[in-house]
Image 1: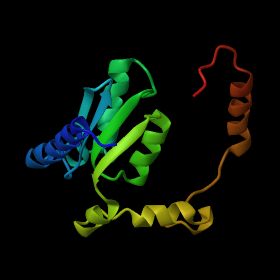
Image 2 (image 1 turned 180 degrees about the vertical axis):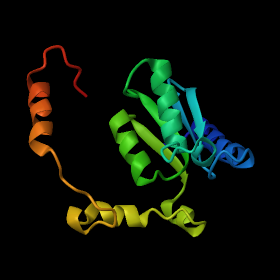
Image 3 (image 1 turned 45 degrees about the vertical axis):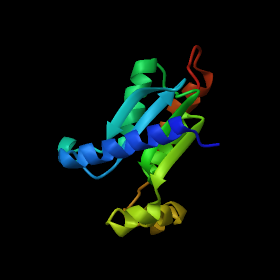
Image 4 (image 1 turned 60 degrees about the horizontal axis):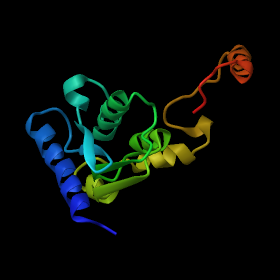
Length: 159
């Protein structure tokens, strides 16, 4: 059930998308993280202003929220975003583990203005040797030694 608060929060994410765009921070995307009915973090796209391709609105908001909560997970949080998350943000959202995501525009709406992520979805489905960016397996056995050490590490923090 969508509430008046949900509408208020999605509108704030949309406002942030306009604010970031107006300030030439990056593309027209905004996001907030809400916990217990209060906004704990906000973000807008900062890709071009920070020269950081990972500075999407959702990632910016997730980083700020995790810092405030002193946690790498967003337990009992809700993310409101001005657009359906791209594949990178979708991954970040799943790793952060919020309980829900509300979004305004769809990925099709984003594609209409030049933010088409369909090729990434297709790349994920492609065999590694057939991807457009070359991926080369190197040092696997040495890397696996560290993985084995992780399996037996005492006091590790699982996530």
